[in-house]
Image (cartoon, rainbow, N blue to C red; front, side):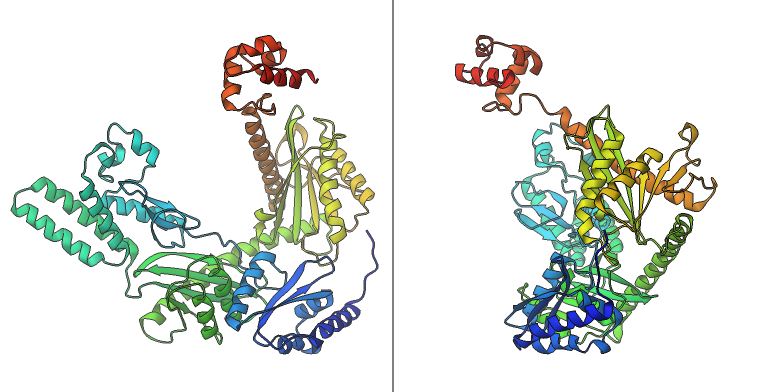
Amino acid sequence: METPQLSLAESLTAGRDIIKRYCNDMPGTPGVYRMIDATGNVLYVGKAKHLKNRVSSYLNVAALNKRIQIMIAQTVSMEIVTTRSEAEALLLEANLIKKFSPRYNILLKDDKSFPFIFFSGDHEFARISKYRGAKTKKGKYFGPFVAAHAVNETITLLQKAFHLRSCSDNVFKNRTRPCMLYQIKRCSAPCVGKIKKDDYDALVDQAQAFLSGKSRQIQESLIAEMQDLSLKMHYEKARIIRDRIRALAQVQQHGNATSIGDADIIAVARDRNVCCIQLFSYRSGYNYGNKTYFPAHAASYSDAEVLRNFIGQHYQTHPAPGLILTSHLLEEALLLEEALELNSDYKIEVVHPVRGDKRELVEQVLRNAREALARHLSMHATQTAMLEGVQKIFGLDELPQRIEVYDNSHISGTNAVGAMIVAGEEGFVKNEYRRFNIKREETVPGDDYAMLREVLTRRFKKLQEQITEDNPKVPDLVLIDGGAGQLSVATQVFADLGVTGICYVGIAKGPDRNAGREQFFIAGKEPFQLPENDPVLHYLQRLRDEAHRFAIGFHRDKRSKGIHQSELDPIPFIGPGRKKALLHHFGSAKAVGAASVEDLQKVEGISKSTAKVIYEYFHGE
């Protein structure tokens, strides 16, 4: 689709003029501003202590880097929100960045909620479990743990030390004898009365006290209890306490206790314009795990700016501890503290330590960040080599940034689906995967060509208005699972839609469908093969296989749901009870449809009026 476009210089002048018009009426108060492009997408979200002064800085375009100049060239409008303070502006900025994922902001990816250790409070015998999500259930929460495996390991060790139940309430209610966890001394079996409630509550209190940092007191108490039992010659009970002390020591060793209390340690490392953020979380002095982040769009920002943006976004969805240690000095540390305290009922400090134990902990986290970054760059170099091979084989002008792969799945035309997977410099981009239910009436069931035509038409019709030179959603390469026929379908679809400038290739298995003998089809060229030991061939096979896996998974999910559906489901007034009675009486939905009104009335719970509704549903009256 050819559309006349302004040069960068012309677009930059137009964008600057638009910003200047907004500056004329902009207040000098704290607030948040948004840059918006021609399609209504948010390009950038920024906060300011003085909105007019901050936005006016964009008017001096010669002093801005190339990336920001391109952003200004794409800006056609702005939105302004004033706030009561700069701290509120910082929180709003972080929320809007999470909501809109602007192209020119530092973006925090893979920011799922962290899990907690949860003690249920709505049961006579509290259950210990891993919990993720909003704290809506009654009980006590300990965490959050940065790594899920740290929660699982800690729960296992706590079960050894305190013998707490982990089974669901339904399993607990229906037990008639102790389970295996009782046999291996990980549960005290309250479900069958092997322990009194007061004694079990004492174990729960000890476990919670331990997670609150009172491990030394708990251990000393258990040692005194074991010695007392030994003096009274209750050796079997003393042995149980001894085993618990050993398990407790294992928990302490696993937790790697320090005197830091509740704190998060955040360090950033950089190499080749790639940033790595390492987060270590400590609660009650115990290491609750670590997590690595590679924020997007961080190349043109300083390490301190990356840290500031990370802290602002991360603690929108995770509770902040009382102490946050950083690897770099942040000029806005006081502002961050003020903003975080707006969502907390306790004091929060953001500190850059320069000496002492805290500095040693920061250095440890910084080493982990550098090592993680080195591993990431090593894997990225391999991925880049594969993309360079793809560029050469298919004659692309530039290194492909986005590859889309399409596949279909069905059984004899039923539960037909299409799937699209996406890959790029970072590997598979799973949050960009898309599923397509084949639903158009003109698509003949079982016709692979018609299915592909529907999927490509829907995908690129939606995309065609957004096809610009720098839109990251536009693929550089489209791979289609199939041969000359599928390639012909793609050619026709792109011609009908007016889509140009996209390389598309069919990848078909060779004779006997042997992997390694794939043929590649490109419009206007003869089909060709790659050597069986070519690494780029293996890479393309992985792309094709991932699309096939994704399509098959979607098809199976859809088929599984269909198995549990019945022809009786859409009939008004027929709920689970009546449906069950009808099927028991007639044996099948088909037999129900063939029954008369009089026969239907013979079923328990089916009145004359309901029988008429059922009969009319099947006979179309």
